[in-house]
Image (cartoon, rainbow, N blue to C red):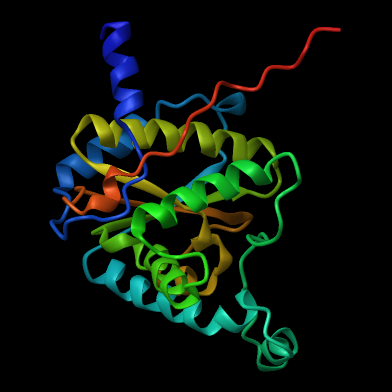
Length: 238
């Protein structure tokens, strides 16, 4: 592959937020996963595990995660007493890592900018809470993707297992892109562990760190949205 071809592949990948329902052929999905195994890893330990759901299993998980999102809305909206009520009823999010909270001051501007840009692209006004809730719920429905992936990392090798999972995930997404598939990382899925444990026997010591939607992009205008990609931050010389 020429360097310019590789650069074009990287630049063509974006977060797809609307998928066609067409299932991914087994041979294509297998090839993508086979490419992903060639990502580099700390001492070649491969300290991650994937749960891959398609078909009826993906649909069950789609419904389960959407229900978890709906139940958590009072927490997201910071309604009085919501945290206490969730604690008393045992309905607090059960993810292995906390997925919500304010970004640090140096990281927050980028998050705000991409959120503002996406909502403007979608025509959702700043004060339209219902519109934002409906859109955010789509994350938990995998944006209609026929296949969803959950990524688990070994808790005895953190943070390096998370580092290795990131290398693998980027390799997987580029392999998917090269075969005409779209992808979208779904960090929100790590908010809840329960639904995935119903469907998969995840090995001991593996913690849920993120999710991923995979499928063929639709023609929905939301897929025209592009986030900015500023230069990599470099440390200054002393």
